[in-house]
Amino acid sequence: MKIDLPSKFIYYTNDRSGHAYVRNKILYIKGLVSWEKVAYDICYALHGRKVCTYCGKSFKKTRITVDHMFPRVFGGVSIPINLTPACKSCNSKKSDLNYYEYKVLRTMNEKEGKKYRQSIYRKKRKIRYLRGFDLPRNWTSEMNIKDIVARPIPEDGRSQRKYKRVTEFVAKYNHLPNPIVVSANGVLLEGNTVYWVAVDFGIENVRVIRLENVFVELL
Ligand SMILES: [Zn+2]
Image (cartoon, rainbow, N blue to C red; front, side):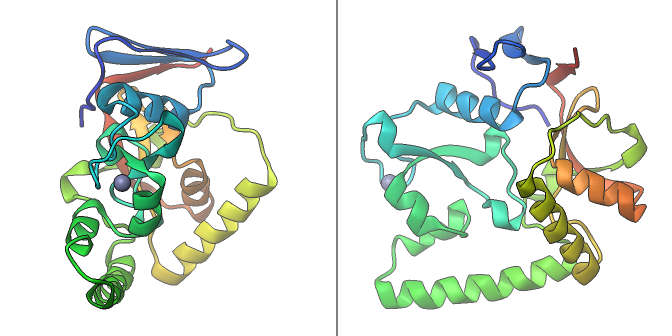
């Protein structure tokens, strides 16, 4: 898919070792840049950092967060089409619901809402067994793991815990919990842990979201 991009955009890492910029409707990423940070900045560049998508109220910049319209826990990745500004209160109330489900929930009273939330979770548990994540079908395609270029990432305790969580998911449901985000030239942007678990489990074909207007140059 092609992602929405602001016409002007520039991002530098804190130590200035890497950067990202938009030129001729293409996002170029150079060096080891956090994809999530770039995606969040693109979200604010596209939608502003003032008005909450859900309640429509205006807030101070510090009260606005980035919401994953399809939530992370059900495979919602950090790509601009899945990101929108939301106030802290809406983001927290929305919790694990997706954009459409939360809009429905907002029309309900507390009792109805509680029931609705429970029915959604029951449905989502089934989705985990069927295909792992809950995202629009046309976002993903299949790719051979050998064609993905992994980026080096620093090891830390958190990634160890993530690795354990993903392996447990694969053992239980027999597929990966979320798609891998790659650039047009096949460089891994998001889903490092899923990528390494797929390698270790010998899973050859993986679901990916390929961003056709994003290019990564590893320095
Ligand atoms: Zn709000």
